Amino acid sequence: MTQPIIHSSRLIQQKEKKNKVLIRGRGIISFIPLLPVRRLSSSNLVSYQWQRPHSSSPVCLCSWQYGIVLDAGSSHTALFVYQWPADKENETGIVSQHSMCDVQGGGISSYADNPPAAGSSLKACLDQAKAAVPAERHAETPLHLGATAGMRLLNLTDPGATQRTPFDFRGARILSGEEEGLFGWVTANYLMENFVKYGWVGRWVRPKRATAGALDLGGASTQITFETPDPAAPAVPLRLYGQRFRVFTHSFLCFGRDQVLKRLLGHLLKASSFRLALSNPCWPRGFSRSFPMESVFGSPCTAPLRPPNYFPSALVNMSGSGNAGQCREQAARLLASQDFAGTALPNVTGRFIAFSAFFYTVDFLQSVTKRRVASPKDLEDATEEICNMTWAQLLHAEPRMERFLPDYCPMANFVSLLLTRGYGFDETTFLDIAFQKKAGETSIGWALGFMLNLTNMIPAEEAGSWRATAPGPWVGLLLLLVAILLVAAAASACLLRGRTTPGAL
Image (cartoon, rainbow, N blue to C red):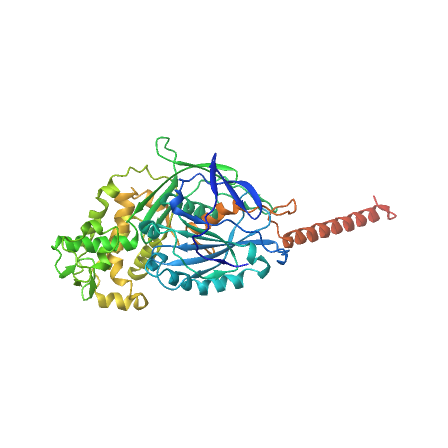
């Protein structure tokens, strides 16, 4: 049985009771423990009543279960296929990434004026997911659509896509900023094996190591999340894999990459009294671009900067002047605003992993300047070198990145200031930041943490007493044990034979 990807005519029946959710579906009623994150209002949640599959559906004897997450970000959408063994560790599935697919086109929020196109854009990735998941698992494989800051800006919960899928679509949900931060933190620490680790004896064990903080820089928001020892700091109590954590998290809406670039342009235009021809100190010398006012002021993040007489179609002609110092001043102005400076943050402690646009920015700086970024001074020096390069020099250094090249100077300045002035990393604590895109073969982001939480909703199937153990290692151990016993028996026989031989002492 297929279900539409997005349809608003049926809503989930949900009641909260002591941090649990009563879910009705597939003929069962069960209480499901959830991560205690900030509650979403019912207006921000679109989901389904689940339906019992046809009795003629094939029975799957597979040892793996699957789940699919559509990460609907502000600038793009990605589809992730996850898998986990039939058994689970302390009611939380041992999940790994099977595959991923980047959806062509912009983020789902860009389809606000043409909702059916959002569903059509997903077809290629859904076809890939159908090939990845065994056909017998299709009807029972949950498909979740999680939307982040771009959709929070629009407050749009029903894109109205009509694409159909054989998977068990569980609805579209707009994650709060805190949820986005927490799920990213869960992903990072899960991949670093800070929660649970596969032991050599064939069991999942809990390593006694500290968790790492998570730094996420998306298209519309940025999140900082870490375990804090400060009892006065606002923190969320979490329980995962039988362990308790006290985690601080905060999301800064309108401080993501795309919105920062729009706001920088908005401030430049406002400072020039909205002239239609001006220079930009953050763009390289020799680069120019024309764009309509609407491309800057059409966002809720830049709406307060709009001119009194706003003409969305008015064309702006902007050219780069390549001034690193002036660009840094523009970026510092954003962090001095009440939206950021008015938020009290606890002191950063422990290791951190910085992903998404944090990684892409620092990776570009290191690649082009051939500098190792290991301190705030390194980051500032590499940023200044990039900002002083001409357009021709940048194109020669990274011709495949032409579309993004003008934005690296402003974003490098923003990242540098965000980490130091905003979050408080200094020469010592900066050394604890690892800039990474993946851990192993798995992408770092909120989607895996989201799925780890959602696997609580999937009952554990019957499995053996040894959890998450593949037969291969045990066959090898058994053969080794048999070989040892045979050698020991042969040695004993030889020893006994020697003792019964005439003349033996």
